[in-house]
Length: 206
Image (cartoon, rainbow, N blue to C red; front, side, top):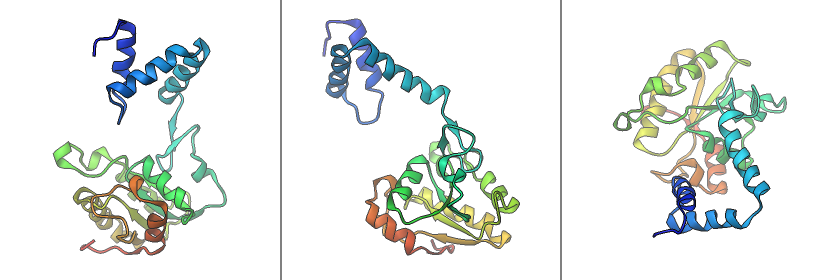
């Protein structure tokens, strides 16, 4: 659609780059900002800029954080000998929402997907092995694989299993309550919670 302002069009074009935001939704957002106060617009702009300039990655698990450690890794109440391996930050949020897990996490930053140009060295796989080997922050007794029920997720899980097996750590996987092809962020909390509680030993057959 033709808009009466190049400035408005630029704002709409930028908003359309967000996931799930089409032209009409982007225009509605932009017009909402036009009708608001200048301070509201500045507050929004400042908060968005802070995502790129002030947000950190936790030095232990690679979750997002406001400081060196994320709240999970910094908490003395967590079971520090259990690691839940997830694809991304959304995976951490999904597992936390179940209320069924009290250990630590390790965020890979994706899954192995050659067709998308994502290889082993593009992910936090070596740091996971090092973390288990170095017993940081303390000896790891179990690694739970909570990865997508996809070919890429299964490939990544098998790679991790092969890397960790010589270290003598118990490797488990969440139960297949999560539908094949689904990411954790789209699983309902009850199903995901049952999948974590019902985790099973991982083997080469998945």
